[in-house]
Length: 139
Image 1 (tube, helix red, strand yellow):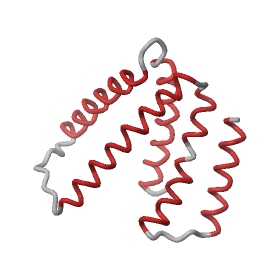
Image 2 (cartoon, rainbow, N blue to C red; image 1 turned 45 degrees about the vertical axis):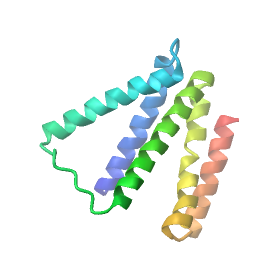
Image 3 (cartoon, helix red, strand yellow; image 1 turned 120 degrees about the horizontal axis):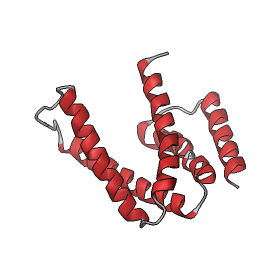
């Protein structure tokens, strides 16, 4: 297994854990405030990891485009988290998480449009199965 695959599986595992811990944690607190607390924790954990690994460095952007897209990515992440925590507050984690995984289908579509990636039969079939599985689990 490649390194990227291990990290992707780690991401999937921790995303699953996030749903369970978030569902428990968001009870009795405003979902937006819960997202804020989560974001602060992420900031400190990431800073600790960077410190422990000695990875602090001067940030130099080779173009304003890089900075703009990182900022836009951060905004999209924040909006995703706000929606996710609100959904967890309102619905069962076992139904929220499958719908959230439709992000896979959105990535495929957006990669086609903006990155010029090719749509293969394998990707089409996989996306269809993700949609079917998400709908079966969530509805």
